[in-house]
Length: 442
Ligand code: NDP
Ligand code: HSE
Image: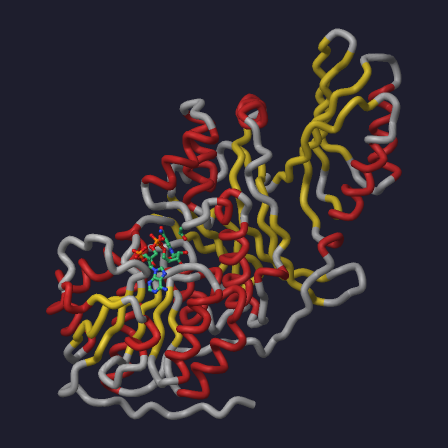
């Protein structure tokens, strides 16, 4: 077991030294708002705050409004300075931030990070390093930017049993899907706009391929189920295969398509309590509360046994919203540096097994091109039934030689659906399975 070091606090007379690593979309706002609101923040901390240095990748870039004497391109040297107590990591990526954050924790500095990719990949060694040094590791901004959801799961719901966490946790993809549906904008144009507005990750494929949301799902599932869940445990599908046709067809049928993160605790067919976390494009009814979450906003539902259903909603990306969460964490970490004590650490005692993805259940919207002849409908329906999937609705549109057949299922296992799609593609009557989109919220 890791030995936890006690932090007695340095008292209100010695300033808390801060190192900020990164001056991009988030780092610039962190420095600007921290300096603008320094007096109020110091009152909230009950002690003085001093920015000791600001690390960047490229020192030759112009940085308007930044005290040039604070700038360095040697983050490692900065975090090891004796007068630095808290390190704010807003660089992004995994390998270099991992090195620098671990070094900071091991050197007795508390860390505030917005880096979900880092936390979702290396939570165990980060938590261990923080425990061993008796310092804090805060990451509220890593999930859904401005929305306080890490704190509520860690503290406010610590007395309850969370059953599920589900929602929209990536601003970029929500911004893209919303614009494609409401204005008919192209996918490529909207990806570029999300980059220009500072919503997207440095490599926007992390957003559109679902990896950013999967990292956030891993963090949420870990907190909700007191179990270590890494990004590799999360089933992940992005939005790059969603076409304007899918979006308009969904709209006509009374649905909207959202990239959802879904974390659940359930009993598997072997009778074990297991958890799952998945990210994929999802059809939801247009009157569902998540359907009206537009632009780069995020929303998360948490369902707990005693609390019932809670909804968290707000700005899910961008410099200022993310800074709100970073500075909230900074105040918490600074209070502990001044007055002593620690924030709650990682809780993984439940150690629930990760479900086999094939056992996860949801509903499906399966779109096919079939030969327009007598008996095809019955053949397709029989195949679903033979694979233990019951159909809720079937809709056929004639298109001359072929017909479009849209099947909506009742809840079924992923493994059964995958087998059915494989067999459908072998039927002579089925020309093509055009799309399979999961459906939630009815
Ligand atoms: P940016 O790409 O805009 O900024 C990255 C910053 O890191 C740049 O200032 C860059 O320096 C600096 N940097 C790169 N390498 C180094 C290095 N070796 N040492 C010190 N600094 C370095 O990223 P964002 O601000 O958008 O994101 C930062 C983090 O916040 C990421 O983990 C992201 O996932 C997370 N986040 C982002 C949100 C957003 O809406 N943008 C929301 C929530 C979380 P230089 O300026 O010289 O290039
Ligand atoms: N790229 C992320 C998003 C930033 O679009 O949600 C916020 O984590």
